[in-house]
Length: 170
Image 1 (cartoon, one colour):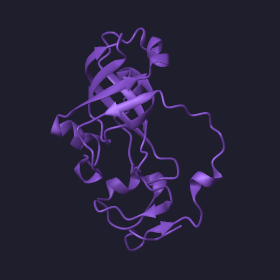
Image 2: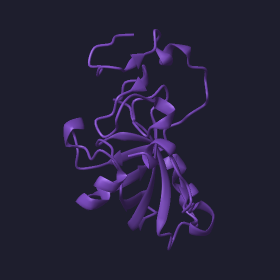
Image 3: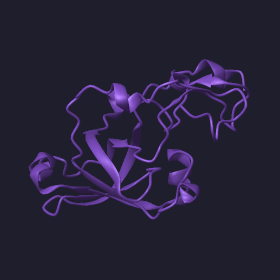
Image 4: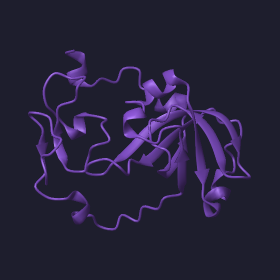
C-alpha cells in the first residue's frame, strides 16, 4: 500500500485489507445525517462532537424500521457506523495527540482495516414511524453508513475503572 500521507513512524500494510475481506454479511441499515460534508470539518472524536452540540439523524431504511419497536423513552444508544472514507491500510499510526507510534488496535482512529466506529450517543428525539432518531455525540460525515444500534445500559456498559495504558503515561 502507499505510504503517501503517512506521518514519520507510521507503518502501512503491504496489501489492501478490503481485498482480503470475506463475506461477513454486513448490511447497512440506514445512513447518518450530520452537518459535516468534509473530513476537515468533522469533530475529531465523540467528546468534541458533544461539545459542539451538533445533532445527527439516524435514518433507517424501511425494511429495518420495525426493529426500532421498544426504543421509546431510551436516552442513550450504542451506534456502530462504517467510516467509509477512511484509509484501511495503516497498522501503526502516529496520532497528533500522542507521543510516538501506536498500533491501530490501541487507538480509536477511524483509520483501521475495518473502519467500524462506535459511539455512545444521547437520544434527543425520535420518530420511530418515520425511522428517524435524533442523537448528539457522533463524529462522522453526512451520509455515513449505519451498521447497527443497541441500547446503552448504564448498569452494564459503564466501566469507571477502565484504563488504556499509554493514556496513563501522558
